[in-house]
Length: 107
Image (cartoon, rainbow, N blue to C red):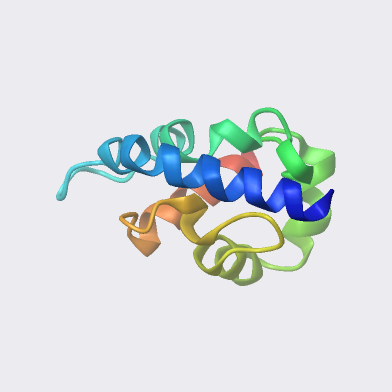
């Protein structure tokens, strides 16, 4: 079952990647963590897919925030468990990923 789940996530990421890439903010635009979250992270973090902490769920985020922002950023940038690096959008800049993480952890 685990292999099936991983395969499903990989296929979904491959299918959704072009749409996610198109949703990346334009260069020079201000970094808006909420917009980046909506375009790149909400598909998993809004529903808690595969254990992803939901945006705004302070109880779910509290132990993660206790680890420190750098740990959260490292997980977001490099991937963690079932979450792909940069949420599956390699076109995101590091600061954009960090802004989305900041939004999810505090919203």
